[in-house]
Length: 138
Image (cartoon, rainbow, N blue to C red; front, side):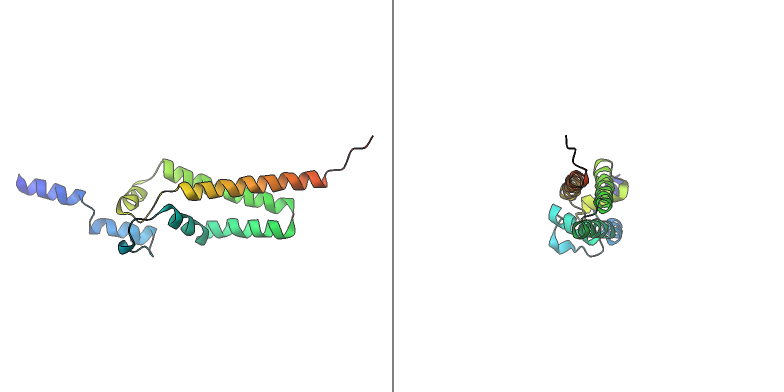
């Protein structure tokens, strides 16, 4: 009976079995740095491929001032933000294990950053549309 309780307690504790989760999710995370924060998640977003795509599309849109690039940056930001929101709202077992171990932090800041980029792109898209619209004169 005691052996079963000890075995059950060892299964529930974070152990080597969970170490593989952080090696897959965040290979550069170090246990000594402590649990991940929102700023680390934001840095992870903008150094990953989707984040670089958002930044690239936004940079291209800002440099060329063309409506289609602002629309593309809006679409990228909305898709990535929706993915982060879904992963935060309905996490899978791997994400839950990574959060429990501490290598994945809160997703609030990356979601807010994607939302701000999308809203900013829509505002500039509207301003460009208003600029290019023919003036009605009576």
